Length: 410
Image (cartoon, rainbow, N blue to C red):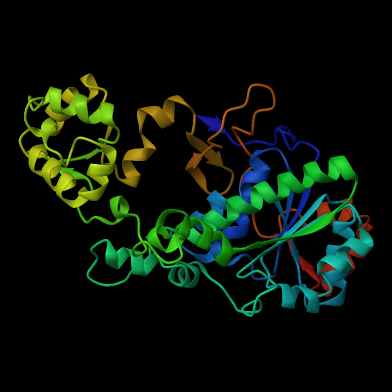
């Protein structure tokens, strides 16, 4: 069992200091990855804390499960940004940072005096990253945005109904938040590289709507790609209701017979080399794509003839891709995830034993953290970070007394 402890800053982003004004999931997911990559991440929280602190299950108030996973490796400072001295403290912190990243709406950020121009007036080299709902050059620039709304606006519920759902629905993951968070990670790293070449900081806008639109349309623009259109939107293979785990004689199995080699091997393995293998619907990739409903339905019929164990042995021997249908609980003890160290058992100083996830990539020279510092208590590092920003002990006491900032003691 690994014990979470202070390991110092290491990894490919060692030496990079990030001022994190994000909350909920999109931004914290991005900055948690930056922390895993070695960045020194300072999480600025309002007096009530990040919303996700309060979403259970949890062992103690303010330490919800999603917060624990999305905020490991960060230090927490509580600042009231509605107070002028709170905003000034953010600007003083920004003077020492390489990156400021926020998912506060840009209009609200400007009212706080924390927009790109204001921050870079204090630190011209800083990378100012604004994660927001919509690109700021469009008519929806000021609209609020949340994962569900962006999923709906980019066609996910429509696609779910096309796929066979009885009514439109969202995916049961925060898809828009986490996808946009990944865009924010590469935006930060690319902007840092650009600064290393030019010496210049810059503003970067990472919009959820445009990021998800790219994601969805990449698969589903289909016939609408052409003018005039050459058919309806939608990638047929992804929308057929037969694209799902197959029922075997005694369970379920995920199988993807994809390319010509897979299909030849599959038909040989089940004794259909001179039967279904010669069916025109199965002969070429184009033919299979044109008849995808019938193709998948036929595989579903065949899968019912053997048990899951029998199918796995047969498909593995034929090198046909297959995987069991796992639940989240299955992943906690999955041999692959345990062997690679991705799933870990860690001891949190206040929350006890936790199942946690390491960074999924592997590096030969500058590896990401495999055991990070724990997700912080609210304001756990307020005094420490204000001191690093140049505040005296007396000034820190005065800020605490005035309610400008907070910590786990006060």
